[in-house]
Length: 305
Image (cartoon, rainbow, N blue to C red):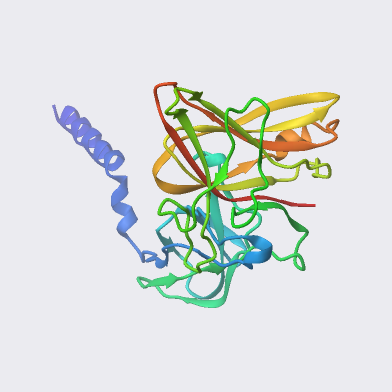
C-alpha cells in the first residue's frame, strides 16, 4: 500500500514537471523591445525626367546595421531588441504584379537611411521616410517610356480594336491628380453600345516598338495608374518572324479609386531573345449590354541595364 502511494506521488510530480515547464521562462531578466513606427513613404520625383510621384508602396523592409529584421505591412509599429545607436535602413516594398504573395523591395527606389539612430526600450520612435528614384548618376536606371497624357497621346490602337484611347478634358473630375498641379489630363477608353446601336466592346492599345530592351533576367517594370469598372489585360507583342502575342497579367477592376500596379515584363523578354522588338499592350472587353470605362495615367517602362 505504501509502495502504491509512493508511485502515485512520483507520477503526479512527474506530470506536474512536464505539464508546467513554462514557469521557468519568468525567471531572470526579460528583454523589452524598442519600437520603430513607419506610417508611409513619401516619394518625390524630377517630373520632366521621371514622371509623377505616384506610388503604391505597401510594405517597409527594415534593416538594422545591414541585417534584415523583416518585411512589415504599412502602417507598421515594429519591435526591435537592439539598444543604443544603430544605422537604420528602410526599403520601400510593393506587391509585384499586384499579388500579395510576391512582396518585394522595389529595385528602382532608393532606400531611406538614418545613421546613429538612438533606440530605447519601450519607446516608439516614428520615422518619416522620404525617397526618390535612383538617379542616372547613381545607377544604370532607364526610364524607357513615359505617358502622362499631358501632351500628344503616344499609345496607338491595334488593328483589331473597336476604339482607341483618348485624352480626357482638362481637369475632368475623374482624372488622376497630384499635389503639385502637374497633371491635368488622363487617358480614357469607353466601351458599350452607341446611340446608333454600334457595339464597341473591345479595345487594345499598343506602345511604340522597343528594340533594345535587356534580356539577361533584368527587372523591366511597367508602372501604371488606373481606374476602371472592368478588368483588363496587359501583355507583350513581339516580332519573331511574324508578330507573336504574349498575354501576361489580368488586372482586376478598381471602379471607385485610382490604383497603381507594378508589372514585371522582364521574364517574358528574357525568355524571348530571338525577338527583334517588343511592344506592350493593354486590352479590355465587356458584354454588349454593358458599359465599361477605363482611365489610365502615369504609364512608365523602367529598367536597369
